[in-house]
Amino acid sequence: MNYIIGDIGNTSTRICILNDKSKILKSVIFDTKKIYLKGYINNIFKKLSKKNIKREVLFSCVVPLALKKIKKVLKKANYKIFEIKNLNLKKIIKINIRNIKQLGSDRIVNSVEAKRFKNCLIIDFGTATTFDIIRNGAYEGGVIAPGVKLSIKNLSQSTALLPIFSLKNKQKSYGKNTKDALNAGFIWGYDGLINNIINKITHNWKMNYKIILTGGYANLFKKVIKRNVIVDQNITIKGVSKVYKELL
Image 1 (cartoon, rainbow, N blue to C red):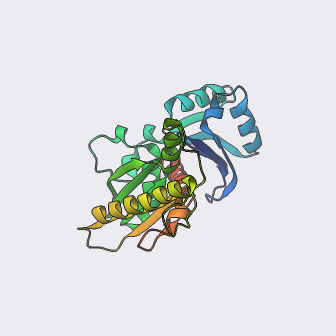
Image 2: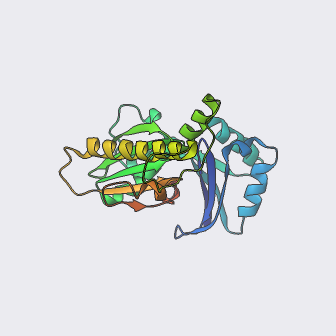
Image 3: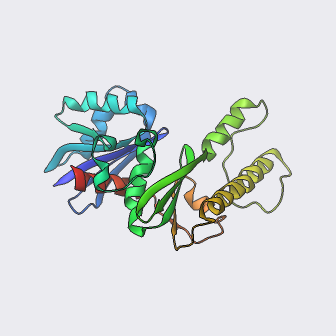
């Protein structure tokens, strides 16, 4: 049977319908704030609904109020809504941190999907830029840095004369105008930040590992990382799907 899963992030939400082979049949991405609009979630589920669909829906969520709203709306349609942290995750991945409640659900499911590589580093360019470490198939911890888009927005809002701008990956020299100067600061700044954090994490890690990039700026910044990387924009949904298949 087909089933529905989703990922609720601080900025955007993705809801997908998958078949019994975990193939994505349909995907909808929208601003998370739209969840609170009257009728919006009902309309999304009407678009996704098909025959032979399971009534259990699993979410990865870092916005509890948004999930609460979805539960309230979909209860009337006889859907049962689950969040991954409500399940026994110890059955499918070892998490070596003190308090799992402090670990974002998106980072957990990314790790569930990536642990097949045994040793890897996942860099997610979301609202925050996160670095998560998988060693011998277990989650070992990570690093949280400022998100690119949010940093651009905050800089513009906090200054009278600096504009919002679209980041471009071609930056050969310092800027001759404001936008080029901003672009240089962000491209070169995050170049240094990303590569330095990778080096700090892997300095004493004497083994082969994969670096996986995901999120909005993954394709842009893969060109500045001084190591071989792969981009997987479906890693979070794949992780939620694995949790669904194994624990629901």
